[in-house]
Amino acid sequence: MIVLISSLLATPTKAERPMEMKMGSFNSRPDAHAPIGVMGDRAHHQGHWMLSYRLMKMEMKGIRSGTLDLSENDIWNRKPEYGGSNYMVAPQKMRMDMHMFSGMYAPTDNLTLMLMGSVNYKKMWNHRKMMGAKHLFQVSSKGLGDTKITALYRLYHGKNHNIQINFGLSLPTGSIDEQDYTPASSNPIKLGYAMQLGSGTWDVLPGLTYFGHTKDISWGGQITSVIRASGDNNQDYRLGNRIKLNAWGGKLLADFLSASVRLQYEAWGQIHGMNPELDQDMSPANDYTATGGRKLDFNLGVNYIFTGGAAKGNRIALEIGMPIYQNLDGPQMETDWVYTIGWQKAW
Image 1: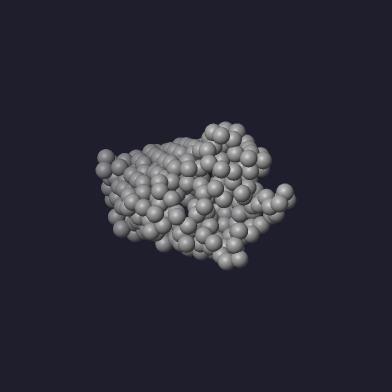
Image 2 (image 1 turned 60 degrees about the vertical axis):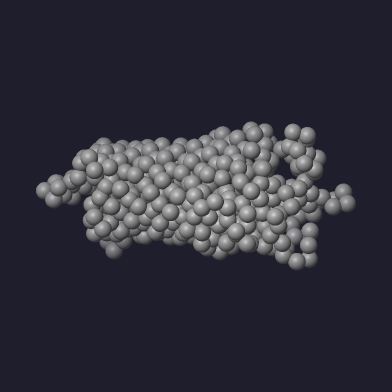
């Protein structure tokens, strides 16, 4: 991932830098970065590096259309407003583990570059109704996700406030050809859209981030989006565009410990086109018309930074969240919870 930030309105001078370092206790505070669930929140000074690792785990359980929860019978006996024939498979739950690795480097005070890759594990449990009985089966996929290169450019850098623009590119390194065995066939068949590991398209990643702090609190906001810029992938579809808005606040509890609260709103569009290998009447997971939505998540986090010894400067963070509002262009699976644990080290 590449992060592009710079001081257009106020670039710190070399004379100011020692003052920053002296008062710069903020850079060594546990809340010197946004909650661990936020990416590309801060640029670095020239010559500085940062490495990070995040494990994000998410569980989805149950089916929703709009703001209403649906039963299995609603899936197997679709109401007229859903259109089409009855689905044959009702998803039960889905789990996703995403291991994210990133490195950042600042060639100038105005520009920080970031590269991020991921390894994803996905598993979905389903019920298929056959001859009046329910049969439970599961499918899974694993492998590399898409690779993100981002640049952060600092627009303003003051004593207590920072503004930066984010601009990145997502490379289609994640597979969109994942298959597994199901009761429908003795051979592996193509898995649904959510079980694929990447988008299959070149995506543009614009954004804007603000970060502020005082003696013992910090706060910020970020807007980012994913724009599917290259048209359909080689499976004749493209995922919908996405937009994400974050607002957070942090409280310093000790020199080494802070807590955070964060709200995240996310909206995503319906898939355009369709994979001809997927029977959309088999399962909601195969139905390209049941893929858009919007949700609001509430997250709580803690951040710990080592202040001495060989581990000095290493930051460990944890964040747990759940949706407080979901409106899905369903029927599709709804999110139950998500948590992220991560490590960061800057030097």
